[in-house]
Length: 177
Image (tube, rainbow, N blue to C red):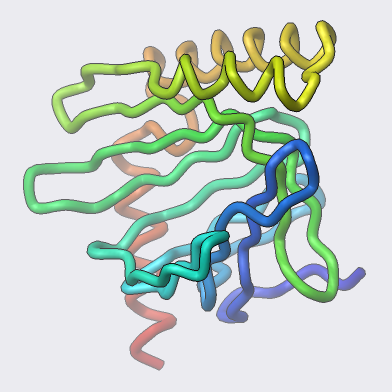
């Protein structure tokens, strides 16, 4: 599969462990791809839920996916500052149709003031039992929460204030071509 290139638009599809489509984002602009990572922007992007409900994202967001880590990161650019929504998820794959990953329920939200909150613990526990997450998968996800929190605490990668600014500025240049 040929990787998308800068300026291309792709679809992002989130699945659940049972193989059911969870959510899809249409027309994410690709800013950079490497063998391991993809950086893009959602800006008033159409999102379709598994029940057919549709909505549009409210603000621009820089998205980060890496095929070695069990999380992805959404940096939402808001008036009050940057908020992050981090999904604990399988490493992504890219095929002819979309960038795809499995969403494993747990999320970490980081507020503009740096406050962190682990979300959806109950949903994770229910799905862990009903969808039979293995002990190995449970371990991997919990270890990746630790990696993610370390990245947040040390402002690594997408959590660096300059990272979001640089990639958003790149998006604005591409958008206005």
